[in-house]
Length: 335
Image (cartoon, rainbow, N blue to C red):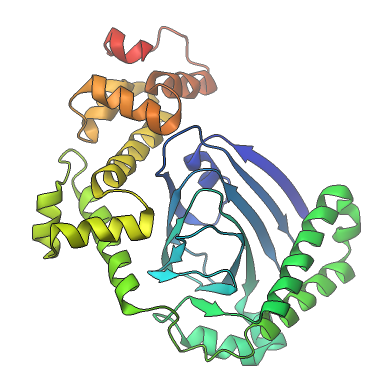
């Protein structure tokens, strides 16, 4: 068993700490980013717990060969997965290889459990079959409150024990007991649910889809920022509908959300060892920020530091000399 607990000051670095998951994390709300990640891995289970102090959107593809369950420990609304609102007493499930978009509000705290299909099929076939067949349908299921509470208690106990005395959890017999307890509680929690039924309503799913498609359009041409009028035209929705969708799903405006997505892309460039040498000016220009003063202010407001500081940390990690800054203005280097 491998147990680890880490803290991060950057959403991109947090996402990179989860190998096997093809995903990007983007910070949406402004301020210093703080997150925690605790992970316990055995030969048959992968369990991790995440918490964030800022609004984050996660998007990517779940690892294949497994079903991935998630449950909120603390989840202020709005929280949604695949266009479905996630209430307090709910379980989420992603199939192996499934693409996902997960919106988490500030203060969100959740646990994810990945189980191989073969184990699920052998130990809980009544749960495995409908989950495998439910691809493309809802990923959010109402759960029995008592079983959900017991599941949270079990997972909290596993993390506590893994940090206090990981040697005890290294025994194969103990790992087997944990896995069987988890699967038993998962099956109990979902016992009353028809897994093919959709939780939530079409209206919320439509709002989520508008946000998703807007983000895709914004990322399609990095150097050409998409406008609200363009989004309304391309998506064939009114300005009010567009505004309402972003407010409901992400608690912000379309302009602020899409600016945050582009700022996160710049930050990933500055943190990338192979791209850090291009400089702040190049990274900003590559993502459509033509006014460096406004860019630096927006960047600092979102991430709590200047873009030049982000790049300096990446260069320091590479061992580059302080003078290796490339072509930037003095404004970039100091703001």
